[in-house]
Length: 344
Image (tube, rainbow, N blue to C red):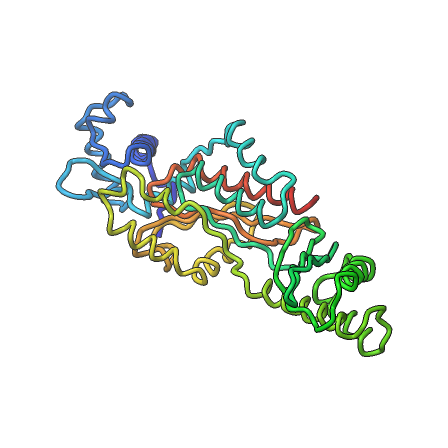
């Protein structure tokens, strides 16, 4: 259990904060001599305070070095009680906005995650919302040999192509007629709604197409819908960022983390727990079962739709030695940018 920050004296709090900040900045154990020039205390006094902080479970010796590093308990205390968050710079905010603004949903999610990954030097992750696109237009391009390229355009601007087999005797003019029918009669409906309406019209013989053409479209819509439902809802970008200059000294941990990132279902389960609440959730090391072995941290925040309903979660995964003061607001800002996108 993390001790309350109020149990620390002002001197203890100051030295503890300096140790953590120096460790997060350089990734090396921090000794009393390194702090002597930043605080008006002797090395002996600093060593005494560091020893007391170690006895409280907030600092530890990584090896025989005289320096200390924060424990996971210490990092939690720092994040919750001492850290002063730094808002993303104007350039960082602009970099995130550029990747989100005026883009189709899936592209915006992927780009925003990649931008967040690059800015934070972590792996970026996002859970994409699972909702069906609405039709705007369907058209066909004849390919010969009984095939055509079907082009489906959604209301969100996404375009999907696939090669379809044509019924015998289907002409180029009939394909134009099929496309015009779908664009006029089914535009604005989801794939499921479009298929249901078309099959009802086939059943009642009210469609303005011949039965073979109508069945071609209905079957195609069903396949498109099933494909959309099978797609992974998790997007991961920037795993290579985890192989930084500190990775060589801790290759086993990095290998474990890269292996853990392959388990998409577990990552989704972890991120889903960040849906509750308004801001960021921070999981440090063994606080979450999945990344306990690699000693990694997860920072995640939900993003919402126009009605305020949570649609997904965006975040980063990286070593516990993160610049939390910088990365936490960055994740939060990316979630806000995606919320604005969903509201347009």
